[in-house]
Image 1: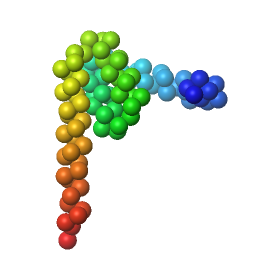
Image 2: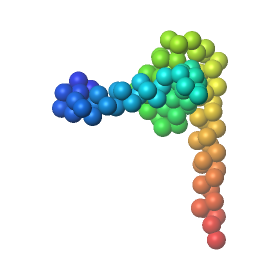
Image 3: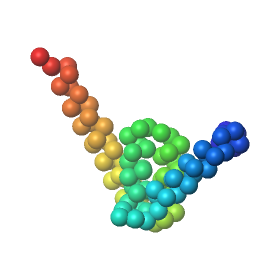
Amino acid sequence: MANQLKEQAADAYTAFVNFKKEVMKDGAISAKGKELIAIAVSHALQCQFCIAQHTDNGRKIGLGEDEIAEAIMVAAEIRAGATLAYSHYAYKE
């Protein structure tokens, strides 16, 4: 499917790939830190492809299982916290 999209929307596809490379490289936040963020966000969004890709990328650049587990738990805390925060609407006056 990506190959089909790459062919039918080549310029936009290439721009996205270049954007992704630029965003994920070392900067003020290290590449490892960015992969941890991506792992957490991928779990919060429940994107199976993203989870697999960013977890694999993270392992390849040296993330440990403990770091990956903590990133996942951060995502769980954010999802749970958001659920509690939205309870405001159930009790809104």
